[in-house]
Length: 346
Image 1 (cartoon, rainbow, N blue to C red):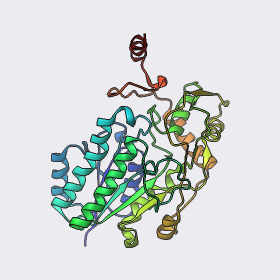
Image 2 (cartoon, one colour):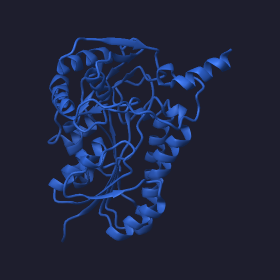
Image 3 (tube, helix red, strand yellow):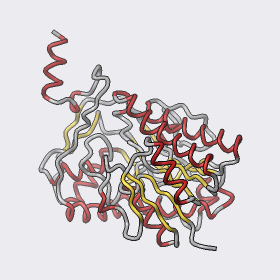
Image 4 (cartoon, rainbow, N blue to C red):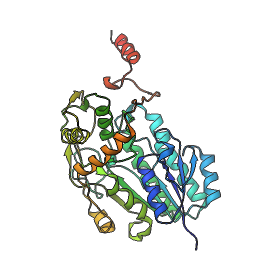
């Protein structure tokens, strides 16, 4: 029996590249798919076969499934700008929901997939549910969380109708080496590190007392990679990540220390977001207790800071396909957009 062949989507991105790396170490043949919209080809680990393309390209997806007869699918590709998702609704659902459906269609039509591993998000839970646990009824508050939960439901239906085995992970606030520090809409630790290197104040939305359990990449990627080897995990939803929540202000101060800069923080207008979001990990402990680690925030941020200084500062990217600018936060507006909105207000 030969080595398993696995498809990893989003493999030039942050979590995807780490999962691909762990799969190669476990002896998998890896096909690494990414459209490079938020990732970098240098992130793709050596030994993986890189395919540039998007999951929304059904013809490409179908061709890959027919050619490689994948044993496992690890679907990590997504545009995870949760706060921006209300303003890019069509893009969000096309990229994060319909792209996922094209993979599920191919897995069912071609057959042979032993497990479809999907990375969802704690965004599916919604507000007022801390500590979040898998037994709760999801109530997502934004289009990003809605799309993720829809894929979870679609996988459950595909299993019920065609027997497609699956595992759903809900990672949260993951950070570490290879994160896209140029993205101004997501990856708050990366944003702060880039701002520190650019000599800019770290921008905090609202009062900064929002709480999140920031999860270092080594607490997450090895578990996702190993999941199909654990039959008890099949058809389960699993929170994965760190246990200890911190406020955004506490995290900003930790980043400042790691980057060797003063605690220069500016407060911007508050976003519409869940105030407190952290989870219980009883299911993960039950299924993956031997693989669980819990890298502390200070240690993890210091590791990422060393990498960030090597990479160097980057110009923040701008999303050019805003679909709704009504209510778009001022800190995301271009000068032209701000002037246009000001003209409308008059």
